[in-house]
Length: 252
Image (cartoon, rainbow, N blue to C red; front, side):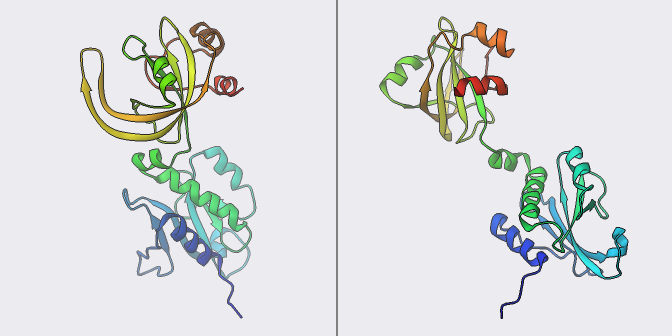
């Protein structure tokens, strides 16, 4: 009969599968303690320990495996430690670390979700940018320098100056400046970091992205006056995020 995996083994298997990280055993004094670290910044995103239950304020003398993970929201951490199976971070009480009992009290799927969160929270800035969820942007287009309306009449996918922080999979809503002064297009970013070198007295471009047309808007729908009066957007001088209310309206 096949042996049932312990929660410790299941956690190690999940981390290896999702992030390619093996447990590292750093302390001779504590041979069963192991950490999971990012390859680039070497920060921990998980720590497994076996500790006496009494040290955790729990009934019983036996030892129990726990997993320490880091959260980004102190309110969320406070909420979790009120629930069975969650504790303040054992030996790492600062920085929103919590401990999770690996004894079946907390469902494995829930543990996996918190490992994923800890991985994102402790990632380097470069990795956070790479793994973040898709984002929506409002991006300006100046018809004095580029006839975007004609470009999208010819083909559905065009090259565009890449904005800082934008990555493939993001959505860009193109705001066309005066004399149009309105959001005209919804596009998906299909490729980024295309090398390019151009500069004049009005424009400098170091990299391009490809954007694919998804939707057109009537010029009267999302004018600059509407952006000002209804969504608090008074200017679109560079790529910027958009409020949820505008996002919802653009998707209707």
